[in-house]
Image 1 (cartoon, one colour):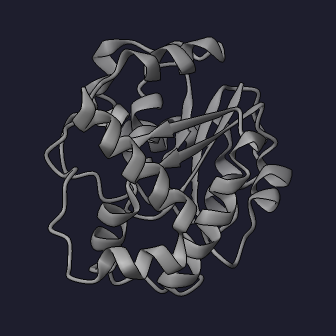
Image 2 (spheres, one colour):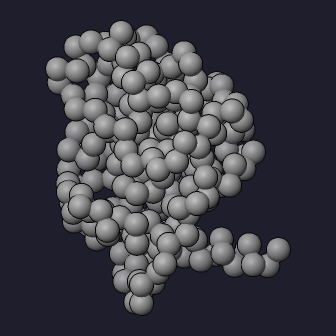
Amino acid sequence: MRLLIYGMQSSGATAFALFLAQRPDCLGLVDILNNYAAPALDTDRDVVAKVVVTTAYPLQVHQERFRPERTILFLRDPRDNYESLKRKPYRNHSGLIDEKFMLLDAVFAERERFDAVIEYEDFVGRKADVLGTIAGFGWPVEETYHTFHRTHVELASALWNADPGLFERFEFSYGNVQSGEVSQRFRDKTRSDGLEDHLATLCPCLLDHYRRRDADLDAR
């Protein structure tokens, strides 16, 4: 099976892909850089790959090359996502940051195209529904995968053994995962004045979704 994760930069999608790559028998391309499309692979092994929202490569290009059986849209509250990404040096790579959030909103509006939508907040909160969704695809997951025990060296070695030619046409990265396990430590960001008004012009649908999510949580 091939799983493709599609999410915004600084959304936590790399951590999610790394979580899925804890399967000892799978391959993991946990952070395909913004200037690459997902590669075609010469292997029959199960693979999880993560790509990011850019104006350079539409989702269709990633899917045509990688040929996933399942594609997952990975989301994060755009207020926290924007605050995190705007501090990164690559925020305007392969599209300006504002352009990418506008594109994300268009993708979110057509989320029924995806096999599943996973929210960062549920993932780092270790909600059982997340594991159930992935297991329902036929991709085994365990609670122990929340601890990242497979090292980057091990992941790279597995890729080399499966498709050594990939290393000649592709540049590898393992993202900015800052903890040895899935954690809520980095979930909430300090939000700048005027942020909500700005995002209301960029990604109104996604912002409204998360505002309603907040209201639902407050009502419980």
